[in-house]
Amino acid sequence: MSERDPRLRLRIGAPGPGPGAGGDRDPERAAIAMARIAIVATVVVGQLWALTVALNAYFEERLATVWWLFAFQCVSFLLALGVWLIVPDDR
Amino acid sequence: MASPARTPPTDGPFERIRSDAPVTRRDYLRILVTISGGLVVGAGAVAIGVFPRRTGSGGDVRIAEGIAPGETVTFTYPGPDDRAIALRLPGGGLVGYSSICTHLACGVLWEERDEALVCPCHEGRFSAATGAVLAGPPPRPLPVIDLEERDDGVYAVGARVR
Image (cartoon, rainbow over all chains, first blue to last red; front, side, top):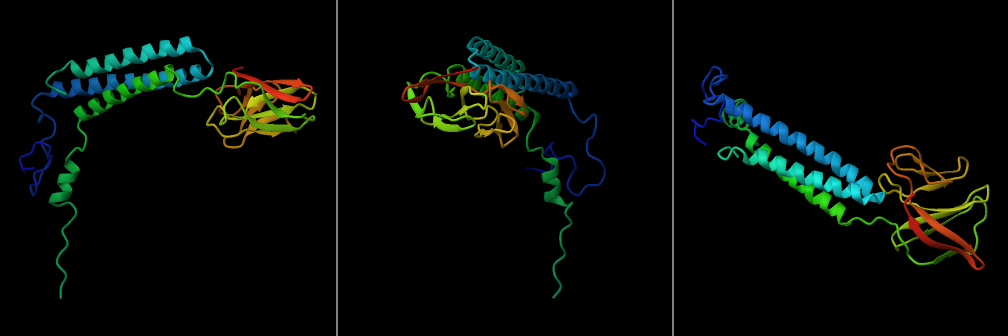
């Protein structure tokens, strides 16, 4: 890693603050990235809930519910995949 | 001999470690999508029945010659690893349940004073008369083991959800 690596907030041995706000050449990109993470994280939380309900339904022999929840999981995954793939040059 | 001066912790390498994000936002997104895919696989495993349900018929299995009021008998049914308990209630009823707690699979114990089956791990309590959850974290009732009293003893004949 060179001293000019943009991930270094502080130049080694240099006093003063780092680049700070405005250093990002494309600030909207960061907001979009955070939004995508928020959406996919919400989807994953929903999937965790669905898996819990599906396990309970399975042990109570409510198999129709189990299959509906499996379909829900598939749709959720496709949504997460879509959010990941929607920006081809940023993944 | 003087010891060499120690490098202050805020110098070079420390700054490099602190300023390098070990996981970038792109990585977070990739990890979350991978977890999402893993959950689909898990849900598929549930749907196709990978996990044993401990119900169904294991044939007619003689479990005891007789059970006196307040007495319990432990056995396995329907499979060899499916622990179960049969008990004669003080009122005379004969009941049988899977003795595997529906919370985290600890073994439940008969508590005659309250006529309850109690899981000692997290204090789950089940009704001895019905197998229903009375208290604690178990999400489901205990599966029921159907019992029959015959001339030569007590038989387990089936296991089902309540």
